Each structure stands twice: as structure tokens, then as C-alpha cells.
Length: 285
Image 1 (cartoon, rainbow, N blue to C red):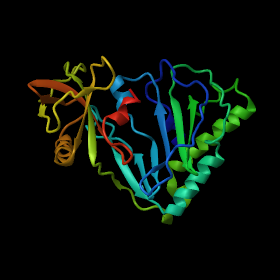
Image 2: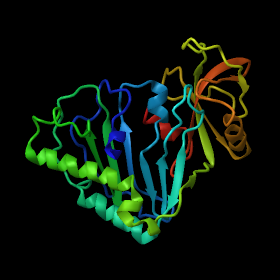
Image 3: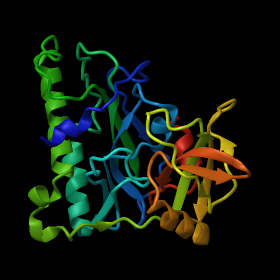
Image 4: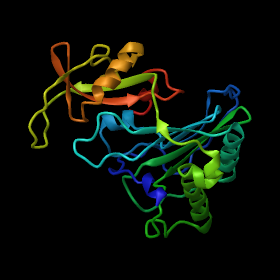
């Protein structure tokens, strides 16, 4: 079931938003062709700082009809160095339909979603832009689990069910809009790549250490993601981004990278059209 995608493999510790948070920002600029109008992602979670900073949205919809999603990942270890991002195109009127669907499912409402009786889970965050206003709704532990939700009220269960239906609709656009309305998937080609780097300490998994690859981007580790953080971040653009992407095709998630006569553990995060540089990741870490 597609809603199973909402369950992180690792759970959350220290939850930022327990129930629901809705914001109306009247200062949000009017939508332009390339602006983000709809997104579903996860916040928080008992995962490593690198995973928090580099986690990708489940789905992002842009006003020009681009829809970027995370595709299935090869079930191997270590996994690929680059995530599987897919892009599809829909008509602008269908973008409006998805915005209307999100509004109808309660994203712009101040809704009591309750708190399921489970610990260490992540929030699912919904963002939609309509009429020049940005609406954000966060739901803790948005999963289909009757036992965890048995103490919730009927209204809370219904509201959460509508959000789960929205996730299903956004992750199966062919069923939602019609197969003829959705262009075939193609690999997303980022214009820039962020690299979150920390000191390399060895494989730690019993496997032989891999040969380090020469880092072709800006010098690592870059600026700290947070004050006093051991993790740094750099943004590769232009020819450097192309070089990073090309080199990463022959690397994996555990490959050490050599920069400045040191080895670094690097998590690569392709930047989305609404993201310019590492600053887009700082709020996630």
C-alpha cells in the first residue's frame, strides 16, 4: 500500500510537532511558473543527522506542471550514492486539480489530528499554496495502524484518513488524473547537488574498506550545517555538479571521498528546483 511509504525505517526521537500545525502566510509571493505549489515530506525522526538533513520530499508539485518524486531504490547494500529521483509532467490545469484536492482533504484547515499511541515516529508535513497563501499542516505518525489509533476520536480518524488518501492520490497520479494526463517518468536532472560531509571513520559494517574517490566538487567539508556541528555542507553547481553526478554513478553510499588530503563520508542530495544551496537543508538538520 502506498501509504506504507509514510513509515520511516527508523523512528523519531524528540518530536517537533505533536499534533497539527497550520500556518497562513499572507506575505507569500504569488505563484509563478516555476514556483512550488504542493509538497509532502517528513520531518523529525530517530535517524542520523545526515539523513535528517538530506531527506527528500515524497512528492513536489510545481506550477509549471513538473512533479518530482522519490522512486524505488535498489535493494542492495551499500545503496547507490545518488537517490532515485523521478520527474513527470502534467498540465497546469491538473496542477490546479491537485491543489484543490489538497485543500479538500484538509491541508488548509486547523484540524485536530490527535496523537496515536506510538512513540518515536516522524511527522508528515503537507504544504500547499493557494491564492497567494501558503498553508502547512503536520501530522504525527500518519500511518494506517488501527491499534495505535484506537484511542483517537472518530473525527480525528477521519481527518487522518483524508490525509492518507491525499498521499495515495499524489503518489499515483495516473490513477488520480488519468494515465493519458501524466507524461512518462524520466530521471530528474538536478542543476545543483548538495554534499553533506563528515569525517570518514571506516566502513563499520564488517566489509572491506573501499578505495576513496577524488572529490570533484568544492572543498569538503564546507560550512557547518548548524553551529558547532561536525557535519559540513557544500553546493556543487555547473561543471562541478556535472562532475559530481558523473563520479557518483560509480560510487555508493559507503564510498569514502578524498578532499584536502582527508577522507570524508558524504551524503549527496540533489537540489530541487525551489532549492538553491545548502541553506535549504539547514532547517532539516
